[in-house]
Length: 137
Length: 278
Image (cartoon, rainbow over all chains, first blue to last red; front, side):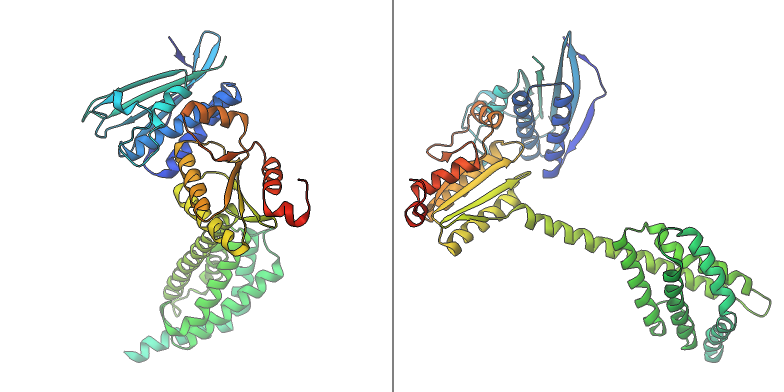
């Protein structure tokens, strides 16, 4: 469906400052893809949530961010991967307000509403992989 | 044995003293060539005179390795020079070359009667010392700046009698959120303020963690009897917060700091006391 147009930027997520790096990288690419200011902010916020999930719940992992094209549209795709404990009950994890940590319980479910494409691949003990993308309109 | 050990540095100090003009001439040329445009010739000459005299004094006092008490003064001078260079933005190379250039002046001293190897080794050790001092000075500059930055990034300002504001700029992580909350609560007490405004115009992204920190700060301020407004909510931030599903409940929010201030003036003690727009 989509073709990568540029090299994949890979950022390891091992500390809090790596979350900031992911955010800055996504913002830069979102600007290059000419996303609207609202879409930029939504995508950056979703990336921030997912990067922090990777760090806090996944015990660290990495993010791969790249520009992609689909016909005339340009977009940004980000993939967050960790080899952590995985999510045993995905439906529960995607419920607003439910958290296994001390957060608001909106990170994962909220991120899904912030982006145009959201895919999650996880199982108990198998790590977690979340893919998000937003396209220019 | 003891005589030999003390005689060698003494002899070297005499050699250095007699050939001082030659050595310093070559040293100055070599250093000036490398540091052209970075420092003036006169300054270099003064610096080198100090270092050279301290070196000769140290040798005369029987110093053989750089850690000897005889070289205390020399080490002090080198540390000062390196620290000054670090602050002036010299590169490590430019800092070390000033000392290593001394070797150019020492090579011609070599003769069957004079073994200059210990002297060259000494200069190498001194070179390492300059590196260390340079790095230490840089470290301290970085630490100072980091501290200044944390101070800078979390000011609590008094806007009016009874109204304080916290303009947040940049990333609001847990450490900063803690600093902000503490400062705000302390300032509320110190100034006897009834109204606090947290302005997030400068916060690039409000995710759930940032929101949680903000909510906690507001709740803490309320517990102390202060009314709290969050201002600087830009359109894109508002839409993001709604999509994320974060609820600010009955917390008062405003688009701009100015709106929040007007609100606070109307509702607060400020309006009654100062007779401002009601």
